[in-house]
Length: 331
Image 1: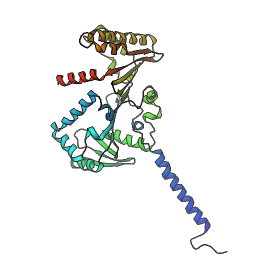
Image 2 (image 1 turned 180 degrees about the vertical axis):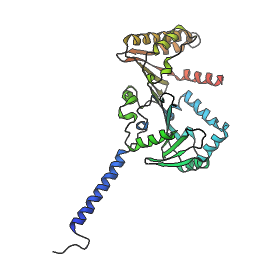
Image 3 (image 1 turned 60 degrees about the horizontal axis):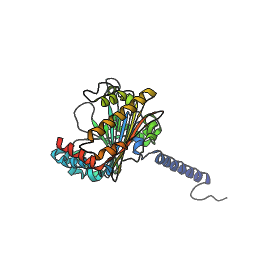
Image 4 (image 1 turned 90 degrees about the horizontal axis):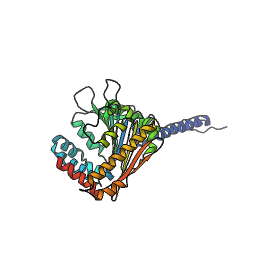
């Protein structure tokens, strides 16, 4: 029997099998990696906030924020960095995700910020290098450690043209590892704050989840010299263990919703009463100066269910514009 000059059938089968294994392994790594930015937020975060700047810039308050960003030229180094990188926050950043995790006793809190948008990685890398940032490599990817004083230096990972991660070095490295592992230990794994993702609309223009129990300091203090409804609301909030907030940009204003969870029925009743008291005081306060707001406030809805108390309503564009104007006048 003649054999092929390219080798025996057994050798060919072995080579083919090895190729299949390599392709499968490569494909598995590609599938494992996640591109969902929420999966990069650590599950043990005590608070996470998502802001879709591309939508918020349409609101009066959002427009004011972007105008303030345009004045960043007052900071010479920041203005130079933006010029060198070609980064225009108003046009280039679409979404910002911020998460905070309280440190153990005596340790600092750690935070992470993720920017989604359109970035010129080559120009940003060059600008970071010119400021003596150190490029480092981890098994999950490269990142820059900033040239700063102190023990805990900031770090930046230019993940791809659509995503940048900022935080301290340990946080950034852990974020890159979560990305490579498909989001294991991240917010979308259903752990920690991730258990409450169903309470918010992830497509909202802005939303936040806060584990109040992880911030004991938020339960201390008093309402100071506020009116009675405000003091009652402040007191009732001390029994709340978790808060969910969201806002959606509408053509006529911003629709908002806030939910406070409490396992105690009496505490939920007190929170509901306090919210109704605050709304009543607000109606009285605007009746003469802004009578058109009275009907708006009356349409706010308060619900009390087995888990917590929610308030929903819509803030009209005119009201938001007045808030923006007052903020500008106070500066």
